[in-house]
Amino acid sequence: MSFANIIGSLVCAAALSADSFSNQSIHHIQAPSAQQSILQQESLSYASLCGSVLSSNTLFFRLLANQQEYIGDSQSREILQSFIKKLDNVCTIANERMQQSGAFKPFDEDVFFSSLALKTLIENLLDKDFMENVGANPSLQDVEIVAFGRGIAEAARDFENAAS
Picture 1 (spheres, rainbow, N blue to C red):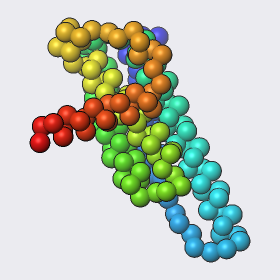
Picture 2 (cartoon, one colour):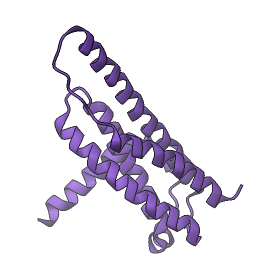
Picture 3 (cartoon, one colour):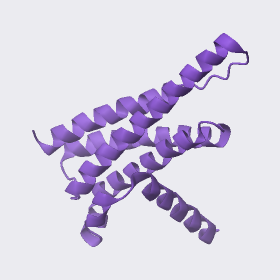
C-alpha cells in the first residue's frame, strides 16, 4: 500500500469523524425523568463522538509525525489540502462550542486542540520551504497531541498580542 493510499484511507476515516462532529448537535432538554434519560444518552454519545475524533486525529498525527517528510505528490497534497479545510471547520465549531458549553467543554477542547495540532503538522509537511529550512522533528512522535495543540494556540495568541 502506497503512502498516498494510507493517507487517503486515514483522511477518510478522520474526515468522517470530523463531519460527524460538525453535524452533531447539542440538545438541551428541559424536563425531568424520561427526558433526563435522553439527555444523559445524548451526552454519552457526544462524549464518544469527541473521543472518536480525538483518536482519529491522534492516529493520523502519529503516522505523519513518523514519516515527517515533505509531501510533494500532487494527489496526496490535494487530499491533505481538502482535509485541512475540514479541520478548519472542526476547529471553528469546537471553538464555538468551547465558548458555550459547560459540561462538554473538556470534550470540545480535546477536539479543538487535537485538530489544531494535526492541521499545523499537515501544513508544515506541505510547505516545502519549511521542511527544507526546519526539517523533521523526531520528538513529535512522542508528543501528547492535545498539549501540543494548546501550545500552538498559545503561541498564536502571543504572536497576535505582540503584533498589535
